[in-house]
Image (cartoon, rainbow, N blue to C red; front, side, top):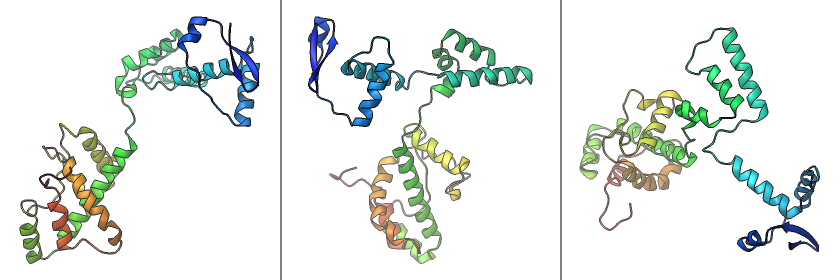
Length: 255
């Protein structure tokens, strides 16, 4: 029997010598409130495991439920789904979800079947908020560019076309590459068309048909250095030209 010490009190942690040899010991400190919760949890178990064993079980349970690739339903969620199934049947609702399939899946404990049957619901993972923020920054930048460009006089536009060649002639947000930047393109369309943000871009397909993200990131670095000056004014012609020129990757420069 193998013992490890938790504080000054020995607790039985392993009952298998081979298991102990495969394990790695490390120190862990908990605040008193958390420790009391752990003690309360293990005291409710029939065999009252040691603190170390209780922590192993809690970690294992936490890792199991954090597996985002598996559908998991608690008892309350199961009850709600079964009640919804009864409502579907009572009102003779016919939709994309088969209530009898859902009920059989719950009764049989085959929650994985929901992922197989409805991959469009359970197979889609939440978008990284950092990507959403980046798309929002890019849309805001292009909003300022287009809005500022529209207010330029013809002579000023001619200067932009010359200074920002070859990007200064047709100044409009082209979107993201529909083949290689699909996540960014999807977020942009959702923001513009469904959430009605940056409405000046509505009605466009927002497909640049060529990789554009690296160029936008170079532009963003320039835009962020002047963004704080734009609270009450538009971009000037020289600033627009500077931003447009940033699309071009300079030899030896970082992307």
